[in-house]
Amino acid sequence: MVRRLVALLVIALLGATFYGLSNNSSGLSVNGTTVSSLNFRSELAAISTNPTLECFISALNPTSFAAGAGGTSMNATGAAAWANLRVEGLAIDRYAAKTLKFHPNAATLAKARTSLEGELSAASSGSSAPCQGTSTQALNEMPTEMRNFEIASQAASLDLVAKLNTTVPLTLTSMKTYYSTHAANYDTICVSVAVVDPTAVAAFNAGQSAGLSVAALAKKFSIDPSGKTGGVYGCFGPSSASYSGVRTATLSTPLNTFSKTPEQITYNNATDDLFVAPTKRTPTTFAQAEASVLSDLENANASAANTEKERILYYYSVVAIDPAFGRWGLSSSGPSVFAPAAPSSTIVGSATVTALGVGASTYK
Image 1: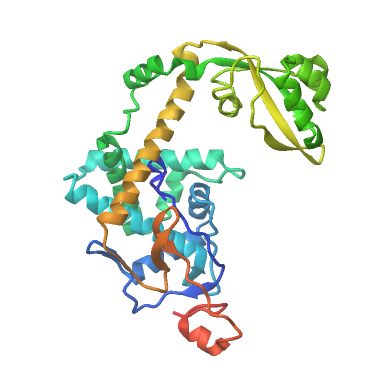
Image 2: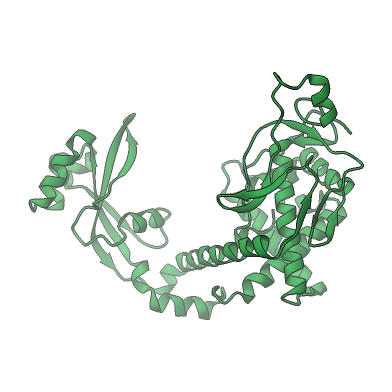
């Protein structure tokens, strides 16, 4: 849950079976550090029975953490997702301690808690259904060991990011330096658009190749009302909510030229092609671009840290996990915990399924 900054939410969304957790199971272990079945089960129960905690975790990771068919169970996808986050957190915590010689003091842990609460709050604010309550309340709903682990893991993650050679410190000085060498990436961009019926795209492209202007192409082919005024759509600066999309859509596109590759959009309940042309670029100041610079650096740092996280899991981690929690394996995005598949009901009878702890029944 906690490592959003370093992009550690790699979850395999498989199945929707239900299972309980055995009191006698070995839990999960990473590099010799073990989370017992009892503690893991108490964490799942805390998530599924405390609405505030469940909401904030779901805001960070859009996975269902709802309760399963029994009081000590959770749906298989949610339990595997939490097991995955536990494994990743333990791997980073152990790597930071052993390789980076990181041993947080009280002040560092206090800073990590503030960072974690801010991360949870930001995730909630950005979700379609913001959580009731506060991130502080969510942390307080965790069992003590769970809360302490999440804060310690956050501290280790922040230390890892700070020590990567490929990350840029998120300080005002570093941001200004980055901006000075990437200023063109933050120009205010004025654009014209053309929404073109797929049957007219060939003619549209032919017209552009023949030298028709952006305005002429929009007036002739665009079915959007802006076509009447030559496709003029407006200007977007770094502070605009639409800036990232506009910047991406006009990347490497010369002025007064429509993009070669259109984006497919739904327009009036039909699928059409959207062409975008930058018509003017105006430099902006750092003050105007500061929020976008910060976002770009956060994304770049997250990408670098995610690569490092995958390296830690792949090369430096010995993982053991009780099959009841999930299965550790290699996905297209790297090592992760998968939800266990339920046996086919046509092959395994319900009584056997219950004994195995999978399917619609649960066990304790």
